[in-house]
Image 1 (cartoon, rainbow, N blue to C red):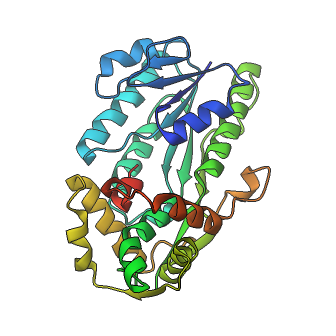
Image 2: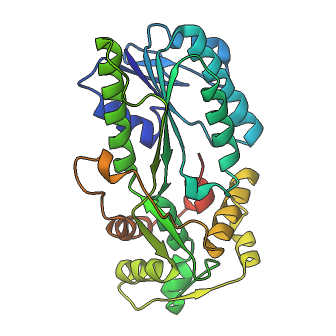
Length: 302
C-alpha cells in the first residue's frame, strides 16, 4: 500500500488524487476513516497504527512551525516508518537553489535522518511555488493600484518558481513506479535518488509588475526598496513566517534563487506549466480579498 501524508494540504491532496488508480491511502492529523488515516506528527503515538501495512510512504514535509517543532515531527515520522517496516520513503524537500534560505535547515536535517534509515529513500527537492511570487506581487498590489508603482526589496534578482501541479505530478510518477518495483520485487529505479525539481523559468520585480499591470488593467512599473521597508508589512504573520519571508526576499535580492539546472522536465509527461501565466492568474484572483496570510511568509513555508 502507498500512503501520502499531509493530504489536508494542497500538495498532499493533489498527490493523493493522482494516485487513485493505485492501492493508496491518505494521512493527516485529522484523518479518521478508511481513505484517510490519522497520523498526527505532533503525537508520535498515532504513527504506528497509521503506518501499519504501508510499503511506500510519500512523506510531505510538515511546516507551519518553528524549526525545532518541525525537526521533532520529521524525526518521529522517520522512526515510525522504520519501525513499521516501510520499504520506500519519498520525501518532499527543498530545491538546491534554496540552500541559503532559513527554511532549508529542517529539510537538510530530515534528508540526513532519512539517509541513515533502513528503507530506500527518494528525495524530491521541490522548487519554490509560483504562488510565492504571486504573493510577493499581491503584497504590493494596493500601492500599485494607487500609484502605478510596484515596490519590493527584490533588487535585480530573480527566483525560479514552479507550478505545484507539476511537483505533484512528479511525486505521483515516482510513487507509482516505486510501488510497482516494490510489489514486483524489481530493482528500485528511484531508490537513492535526489531529484532537483527547480522551476525552469525565473521571475523578478519587473515580471511581477507586469503581472500586476495585467491584473489591474493599468501600467505598473517596478522599483526596488530597502529590505527593512518590508518588516512593518509582516506584523500579521507568525514570527517564524516573518523570518522566512525576510530570508526569501534577501536571497532574491542577492541573486541566489535563480536555478541553473532542473530535473523536472524529464520526469513530466508534458512540458512544465507556464509559471508566468499562473502568477498572473493568481494575482488576478487574489486582488479582491487579500489577507496577511497570503504574504510570502505563508507561501514559503515547508
